[in-house]
Every structure is written in C-alpha cells, then in structure tokens.
Length: 67
Ligand SMILES: [Zn+2]
Image (cartoon, rainbow, N blue to C red; front, side):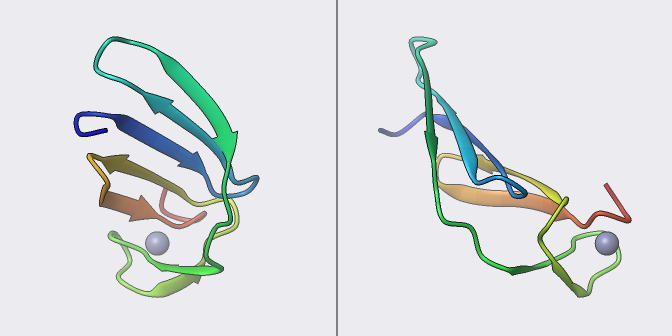
C-alpha cells in the first residue's frame, strides 16, 4: 500500500486513491467533523474544507474560508 496517493472530499467522504501503477480506487469513508486549518490555525468544521494525504500522512488542510 505504500506509495499510494489519497484524496478525500471532506464534504462527501468520497475517497480517491491512486496506486503507484496508476490504478484509481474510489470509495467512501467516514470523515471527522473538525480539523485544524493550516492557514488560519484554528479548529474549523471540515465541511467544504480541503485536505490531501500522502502515504497515509495528512499534509495540509484548509478550511472553507482559506482554501
Ligand atoms: Zn482557515
């Protein structure tokens, strides 16, 4: 599983994973309700925010205002 690129749409829970060979896997996940915004540095409701995962680690998340 290492090397996968993963993006989760926080408003819908839709997840897209892209394997190293380019295979796209789409499924759905339960998402948390609040997240720490990396721009305004506050806990914000995750609805309409954006974040990205790389190899299972969260990189950045931006709230609805900051994205
Ligand atoms: Zn923010």
